[in-house]
Image (tube, rainbow, N blue to C red):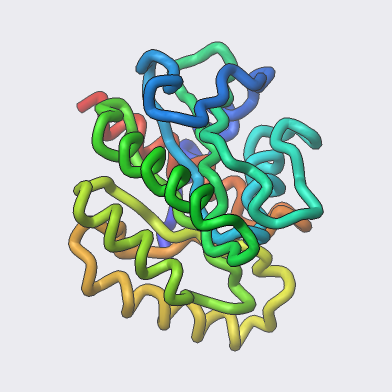
Length: 214
C-alpha cells in the first residue's frame, strides 16, 4: 500500500474541495467532450460501489447517482469542479442481465475512449474487498494493458471485511498485478461508508497530477 505525507494528504483534500458538477455524458465516441485538463476515470464491476466512492471523493452526497439496479449507467459521465481535474464515471461491467447489443456498444465506447484520450492520466479499477478479483476484471485489465493505459486497483467496501481477510486480499491482488506491466503495483483501500482511505485516494490523484507536470 502507498504511504502519503501530510502535505500530500492536504494537497489531495484541496484538489477535491471544490464545488463538483456534472459536465458531460457520452454514450458514443463521437459524443465525447473536448479534452481539457487532466482526466482520471473510475471503472469497476456493477454494484462495486463506484457512485458511492465518487460521492465520497468529491464530498457530494448525490453527485453520482447510486442506482438500485446494477449496470444502469451506460455512458461515460464527466465531472469537474472548475479546475484542471476531471473525474469520469465509466459504465459498470460484468452485469449479465444487459442485452448483448448493449454490452457490445459499451465495449466499443470504452475502447474508443481508451485509445483516443491523451489527457487520461489513470484509470482506477474498483474491486469489492469482500470478493476480490473476478474473471470479468481480467478482461478489463487485458484491454487496459493493450491500450497501455496506466491503471491502479482500489479496493472498496473495506469496512465490511475483517482486518486479517483484508490483508490477505491486498496481498492476493498485488500478486496478480505483478504480472501486468501497465498496472500500478500497489493497491489503495477505501470505504465510502466510513471514509477510510478516501484521503489517501485523493492524495494519490494529487501525486499523479504533480508527476504529470514534471
